[in-house]
Image (tube, one colour):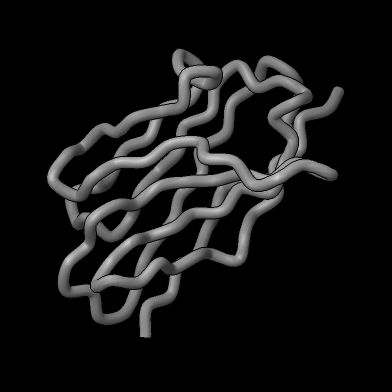
Length: 116
């Protein structure tokens, strides 16, 4: 059984940084995509960033590019979302996901709150 666990969220002031991590455990034979979504209060879940296992760095959606960056550790089981210059509108629950073996797995979500 595959399990995803997020870490690194919390409260940060505007302009601050956070590093979110997602670690996968369990039997994974063929991973195709890993990444992050977020869901702000009253809004739909939206894609933040994603990458393919064969690459160390991935793609960030246009409106976050330059502030957010996604990467994967050498073990390919932990991927990270570096969030810089955070804004109040970045406040959301961040979910990591993994597409592998014809299934999509989700973490339970981690809160990021940007507030002064």
